[in-house]
Length: 519
Image (cartoon, rainbow, N blue to C red; front, side, top):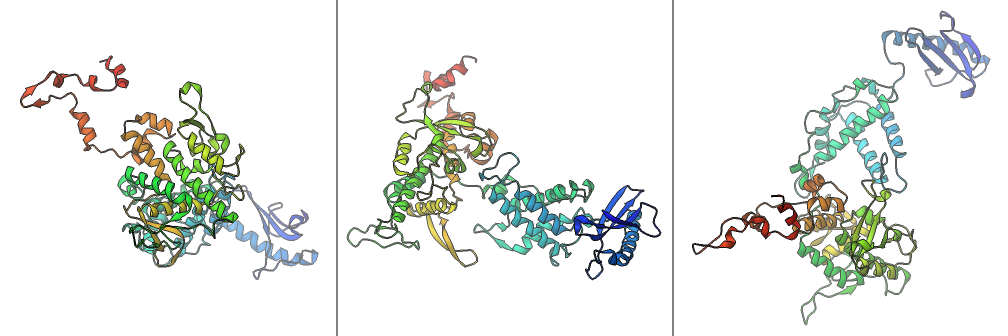
């Protein structure tokens, strides 16, 4: 600081103007309120936006503006008002920038980090809040330059109604949009922005945080059930494996690029099959296309054999699959051991599982151009980089349509043409790549292959999560009723046999006999 000049009518040291070297010698005001011990440094500015001349010639103008600003500040601090404020828009912008720094470069969230996709979704959702502030019909009808400390703590009470009213649409199943869980997530994100930026940076106190609305904040199982990813039936899995092996991996299809059938053979009435590979199939692009199709088909088989999360499968490297250990007493001709690093796992935990995938592994090795230990197993055969999401999603769409499980969807709900391939699933389920994991877990539990706690450990998820999201237990199924029948008297033509009185535990398999000894 230089050229310090105390203002007239102020206590010595209470306020003065000076030319600040850190701000290109602009005239600035220093003010301290000795009652509250608050300090303020303010660059002086005319009402028309001009700065006083940054020389001694601008002293008179600086003194006039400084004196006026000093008394305005002093009156505010004496009344307990804020001298510095943060606008809602500025808070949201700062929050979005701060969250951007949490993006994990590997695009796999560890503790305290997020994916780029999550950040983009959050940024988009925060814009809804700014629109809510400005909307005069269903929102608050205020400026987004309003100060956050002036916001009513109950102002989010109308947010749910605003989102539903302004969208005023339903999904294909007739459910109102946005879904309740989406709006609830947005509300918690808004409150988090006030906490991270407003409270931590001391723009507001904790008791000024917006309160969570009293209604529509509980998302029940019944409300989320229809939005969960659905599992495949066994017949659907068989159909997918059949078309994947016979048609998809070879680039052959019954449908053209628009999703329409080529037609039927006049002689035998069977659908006409044609190649969907680029050109005549001899170019590098066409060869890469065939390799990608074969690898996608094998990825589907790995998903069915292991139950691994889709995000893990996408990021598997060759070094993550090793020979199975001798203590497993299984042949390496059939089994491999899959090591899942914590960096690519959703739970941030390392775990290993055995998998009957040696045949699949060997096929992938022959197909891929990139087989070094640190190379991705499923990668672009031209660049070695991770596949785009479009390759995965369009591959699933193609196989679902080829298997007769879905129809090609060509238009958005608003009637505009779709750019990427999409489908209408005939069963009404919500199918994605995650459905293979869902199916694996359910099949393991329903077929007596594993107990609940064993599936939980194998798939690296909690029993509670399995009960809630995966296992569809049918208490009226014949299998459950057969188990209830065990140990009860059975009468055949009025004759009771010795077998009817056989203790229940003798009918169970050997894995239960140890427990029966305790009885």
